Amino acid sequence: MPDPAWTYTFLCVSAFLAGAMNSVAGGGTLLTFPALTGVVPAAVANATSTVALLPGSFAGALGYRAELAPSRRFVLRMLAPSVLGGLVGAWLVGEDTSTFAVLVPWLILTAALLFVAQAPVARWLKRHRPDHEPGRGGRAVLVGCQFLIAVYGGYFGAGIGILMLTTLGFMGVGDIHRMNAVKTFLAATINGASVVVFVRDGLVNWEYAAAMAGAAVVGGYAGARVARRLPASYVRYAVIVIGFGLAAYYFARQYGM
Figure 1 (tube, helix red, strand yellow):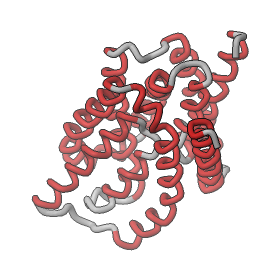
Figure 2 (tube, rainbow, N blue to C red; figure 1 turned 90 degrees about the vertical axis):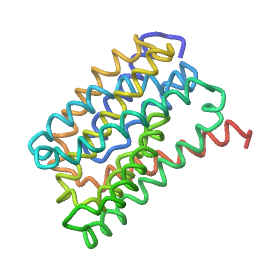
Figure 3 (cartoon, helix red, strand yellow; figure 1 turned 180 degrees about the vertical axis):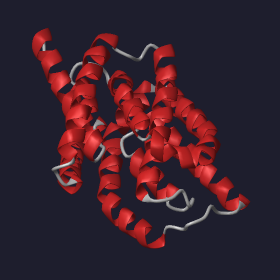
Figure 4 (cartoon, rainbow, N blue to C red; figure 1 turned 90 degrees about the horizontal axis):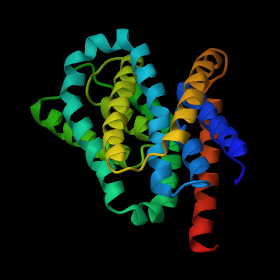
């Protein structure tokens, strides 16, 4: 895309749609990351995509502040593993950008599979969700799981929402709205930590990130309004189709299929 005007238009459209998708069902990274790989290397695309979608993540967390209040103690417990994991994941990207490029098809495929699992996991949690927190040993295991999720989130990020909802289901956090609130806040924390490392390592294309961030915020607002009328399952199915299609494309490009 040699024409700067078309490049920015394409990237902003992808960010607008990503913001809308994140408001309804998640998965916006599966649009912004591939769009950016058309103009910058994979590691830079990953970092720039994270920065572009970060304002929307924090805006979403702010919108859940009422639901977050009852879970304040739990959120504070999960803050340290989220920040540390996000830092480690982002550091791994900067340490070996060539390996990250090789892993791109697998990362996108993983994200698509996570979205496939989202509905059955949600149904299972609805039937089996405990109404109290686990004991000390159980909490330690779940803190470790949150750290690993945060490492993945700092490294790539697409799909961390369903991973966190799965673990949150074992923590007695509360109903699905409180779980979504905690998940949104912790995801924003993971992304914020990873951005610190991406900026330090010089992996962010700020011109693209700034333009896309504005488009993503507008898309997130529009998506929130549409979400009241459109079943989230429709958008989730679209995310799944896009994810598998992109995984197939990147596998074909990488392995010459």
